[in-house]
Image (cartoon, rainbow, N blue to C red):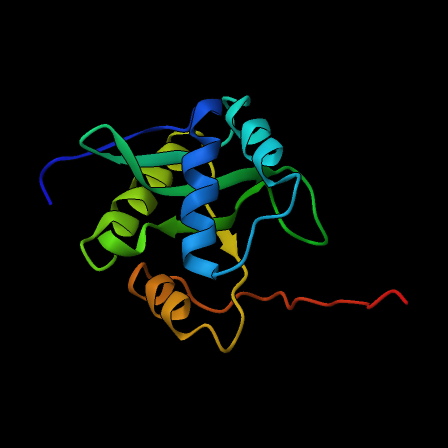
Length: 145
């Protein structure tokens, strides 16, 4: 697609991102989702971008820098990426990711991490095409009852 504009996330994009998230997941976003997106938009050091087609947000990528962690050097983390289902398969996610990579490379970041469910084949495939591979870390969780 030639008419895609990739630009930095703005706070006013939160509504469009919420709608895309809901369309992808088939569930309503939590009540604080909108505010969370606005918070990411307010920080210049975050590599958060949207893809616009004809002035409308068609996709987004949310990422941020982790300065410290359990054995990890300063790196970036991608917690969310999404493309409006009407525009999936047209390279929008790839363009968003490539802009994010350029952003962090220019900031001196050498590694970017994400976490994907094992049964999320579409996301695993997407990140694999971007040359993501398993890291030395595993996700752990504790259910609080």
